[in-house]
Amino acid sequence: MLTLKQYIKEADEKRSVVGHFNMSNLEGMWAIFHAAKRMKTPVIIGTSEKERAFMGVKQCVALVRSLREEFDYPVFLNADHTYSFEKVKEAVDAGYDAIIFDGVKLQIEENIEMTKKCVEYAKSKNADILIEGELGYIGTSSKMYDMLPNDVRVSADVLTKPEDAERFVKETGVDLFAPAVGNIHGMLKNSPNPDLDIDRIKAIRESTGVPIVLHGGSGTTNHDFKRAILAGVSVIHISTEIRVAFRRSLEATLKRDSEEIAPYALMENSIFEMEKVVEERLKVFLSKS
Image 1 (cartoon, helix red, strand yellow):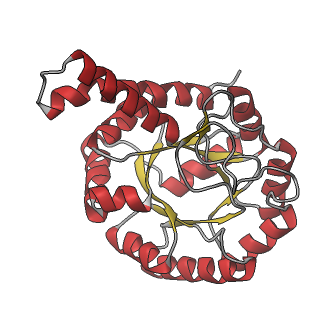
Image 2 (image 1 turned 90 degrees about the vertical axis):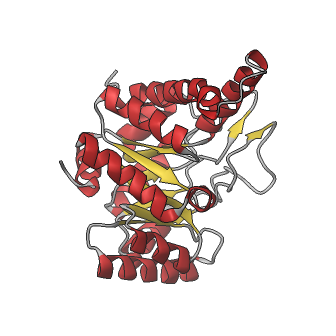
């Protein structure tokens, strides 16, 4: 089995992508794993700060590691959107395969300084841990919106500039880079999310020389996914779509089986519906047409 770094490098070279899907519970983990295994593709399971606080940091590591070892399958764990050095350190020490330090609300100088500190600590503990940095604000919540949140803009003047990305990667030493290229966290209720700036993605990939990660993939059109992958995106994050599938399926189950009290029975359809979301996205990511 290759390392996560090797799988992402391979995807980068082939203009392919490794799917990243967030889990908030055990049901989500099984949904992601079953779909990836059926599609025969490596997969990254992500946990945000709140998700891993809910499930347990070491418990998340133990669960994903158990899948990898029992099934001899390339499933990896990422500490998604980590906002402090202390939380990065916690994830490193627990045994996460990858971690993103999210310093987008900081001034670029402070973001560089903090990201570099995270890189240095992680590599001192385990050279194989991947550290991702982010530059450019795309929001913070996986929610359904009637319109773009007030604090999120997708105009060219606020998106990540290739020259800033180049400086950031060079000075921090990150393995992966996440830019703002028109992507947003969360989904619009009545329309696709904004179009991605494909030319910007290509320019950032060329200027940084490292694999590009697209956050906020939920709600993005298949057409934009295809173009983004060809432009240099090697990892795509999906979270909101999974959460929507979970809630809607659970509501339907509770309505249909109003007397059921066994949690595993109530969750069975939710696993199935989340699994469908993951599989459909993986089909898009892996399709060559």
